[in-house]
Amino acid sequence: MKNEKNAASSAEPIKLFLVDDDALFLKSLEIEFLQHADFKIETFATGELCMENLSHNPDVIILDYQLDGIEKNAINGMETLDRIKGYNPDIPVIMLSSQDKIDVAINCMHHRAFDYVVKSETAFVRLQKIITTIFRYKKMEKELSWYMDRM
Image 1: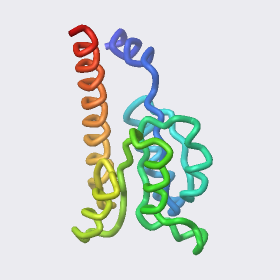
Image 2: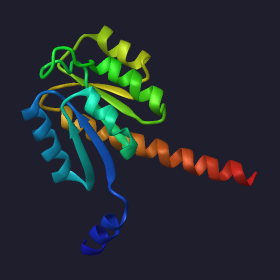
Image 3: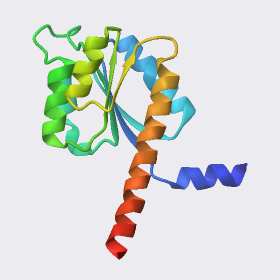
Image 4: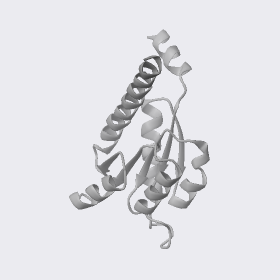
């Protein structure tokens, strides 16, 4: 078991951006991720702050849908999503919201969110599964690219 941990810790940690205007929720989400895996986490209370730090090249962004709790004129999650995709369309963005309306989720997917998660007791488990899926896709893309280069 000790060798497994050393092998896992030698890999680069996943760079994760958490963007939410609810400071308590943001901190609890950060703690959950840090307790369950090797993540390098940056947290932001506004979409503007997230945008200012995109040069840090996050592997995944978890983005709140609302984002108006701190500053009423702040850009919302959808606008932040659009700006992230304009900056780099390959960054997977998972939208997180207390909105459980299907039309909100569909709208997020139309704006190229990787997935949509409703804030709940099971949200963290769902986020973990989605991040695992993202990295499975990335691994498959690399393998496919490697094979295609050799053909």
